[in-house]
Amino acid sequence: MFPIRRNRRLRSNSVIRGLVRETIITANDFLVPLFIVEGSGVKDEIPSMPNYYRYSLDLLKTEVLDLWNLGLRSVLLFVKVDDNLKDNKGTEALNPNGLMQRAVKLIKDTCPDMLVMTDVALDPFSSFGHDGIVENGKIINDATVEVLAEMSISHAEAGANFVAPSDMMDGRILAIREVLDQSNFVDTGIMSYSAKYASAYYGPFRDALDSAPVNVTDVPKDKKTYQMDFANRDEALRETEMDIDEGADIVMVKPGLCYLDIVSSIKQSFDVPVSVYQVSGEYAMLKAAAEKGWLEHDAVMMEQLIAIKRAGADIIASYFAKDAVRLLHS
Ligand code: PBG
Image 1 (cartoon, helix red, strand yellow):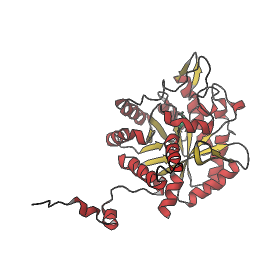
Image 2 (image 1 turned 180 degrees about the vertical axis):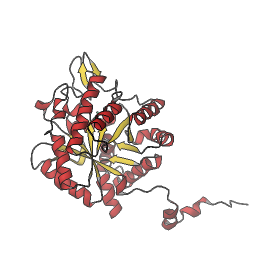
Image 3 (image 1 turned 45 degrees about the horizontal axis):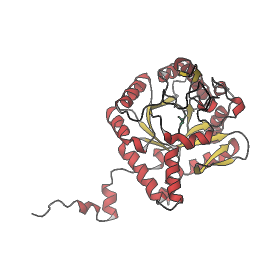
Image 4 (image 1 turned 90 degrees about the vertical axis):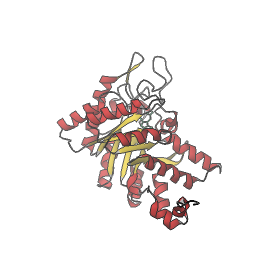
């Protein structure tokens, strides 16, 4: 009885492969990160992120319409703040007429149904490049949480659908949920960066926003006292469970590819949507290898995105969103 079961039958042509395919990806899966700068007519390529740009508000408008026409319907906003507006407390983050607040309004005016999520953390506004307030060589938790909560209200007032705290301070989800509710923003959601690791893959992003921790005495050189140790898995479940208890609508794992075991565990353990951030370093690696002719760009990109989805991602934040959707349409 040579095999009764021949698994290759289900792989023998593209039609049968299509019928039995378990994972697909569509434009609905993507959250598009956008980098925004002051000025006009600016579309600045980020050197370590080929074909990815920082936009001034006028050109952001065009980009958002372009995304919408491609079927991409959610964006995650980051701003690059002028150095002279940065301080230890991230005061500029609360400016009702700040770049983030203006960007949210502009997108909502341009494309009212575009789902807008905003990054909530102090690093782009911090003179020290940290996600929180620095005092005596430490990132202080509770005072930072107060600023994050105010920042969230400011984003909600501007019209954000979701705030996305990426800072990893303890207790921030509950604090944000409480102030949003008290201010009648009951419909503003929270996508929590729940399992965010202290990763070396964020380098190109910090180039894009000029937001790396500064090298001065008494300021930690890395984010290891708040972002997670990449050696840990149980801790990711603990972090995620707490964020859900505190009111997170969506949880996130970040980075993506190296952390798919974490994605899979979280997906199996909890019943809220899981978002995965395929980060800047992951984007840069593939772009660089493809530029050298060492990897086939589109094929590897799709393999990676499908792998992220297969592991359990409901939402993928990715710099490849446009490339992927164009490929799907072609
Ligand atoms: C800031 C923030 C970072 C990223 C998203 N939000 C950088 C960091 O934590 O240092 C990284 C995203 C990427 O690398 O694509 N809180």
